[in-house]
Length: 217
Image (cartoon, rainbow, N blue to C red):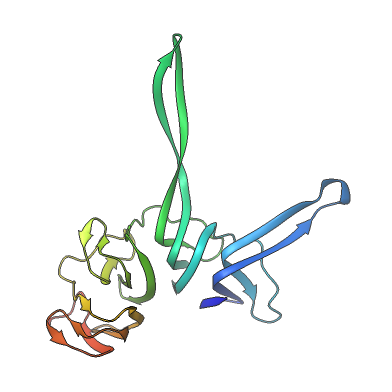
């Protein structure tokens, strides 16, 4: 199923529970290429562009793009590298083990190739359902309680380069089951829609307008 779309030049980035594959090469050396999570397709004939590889596993719920960066949110994982752990020597020999490292639920990638932007580390501890960009801030909604190790219930603003959560933005949508599932942001406001009863102690049923992280209340 398709959950999110983001245009990029003559390509459309398609996210969701997505898996496509093809077999290439001569008969004696054939191999299978697969693309998961986010797939790039041509806007003219929907042909898959296998030059883009997001390496995302899981369910993509939200996409938002700025210039050559695509932000990918959902209930997902993305391998980010390998860490070498030194083990206790055995029989006088040095030992080590390679451990795969992952990013979860929200990542930033190159919209051209799918390469990971390693500086962006927001670390939400739960599913991301919606994203919106305004200036240098990325607004993130979903079923999480922590972002970057700080308490941010279901809605947060993070730096679009580093993923660090904004200090003075914690509106706390409350009630309902799904929470905020749609976001739109401009220079001064964030528009939030979904399934909720209040923002903090202020009653707001299913739709709210709040100041951005940089705007006065």
